[in-house]
Length: 228
Image (cartoon, rainbow, N blue to C red):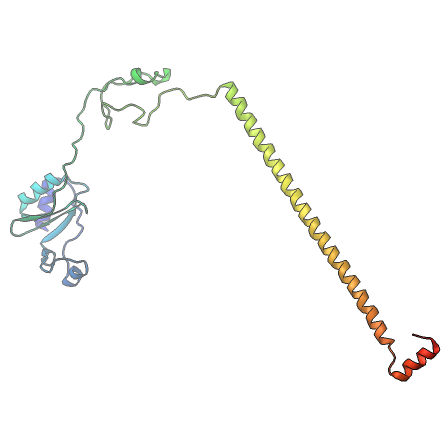
């Protein structure tokens, strides 16, 4: 911990420790080397999100971290106390910050200056590159675009047409539903009429069956009397 504090003091920045001491069980679970220095508490994985890798490497060596492992794809550097040794592909060089430069007045070259914009400074503002434009910085000093009278009229006609088109579509859908309901009612009426005719035929058949002679003698008597 004293070495980590010395490294922090030398860099002047906080250290984000991703991994420090590991028990043997945890070391096996995360796929650590069987002789990992993490199990001795002398190895640390430090992300490079807030450090320049070259400066961090130099400071680590200076305070006594002679073992260095580079993991640029995972974004961290492994440091440990022990024999001088290193492995892995070094981190790529990072671009340095832009120095303060004089900024050209790009408004006069690329776009008209708005009357209310006032004077524009020719000195670099924080975070503004010399080759950038004010649009790149999130500022657009041009006058807002206004629609021509003809375009306004066309837009109004389009909105009116869309409104009436929606009304017409609603009416058409209503009529289609009404027609479908009428067709269903007609089919139901036909089924009822067919059932009534069938019931009438059944009743007549039952009446005829009830009037049938009980035996041959009754049939002969009806024939003699002329009743059928």
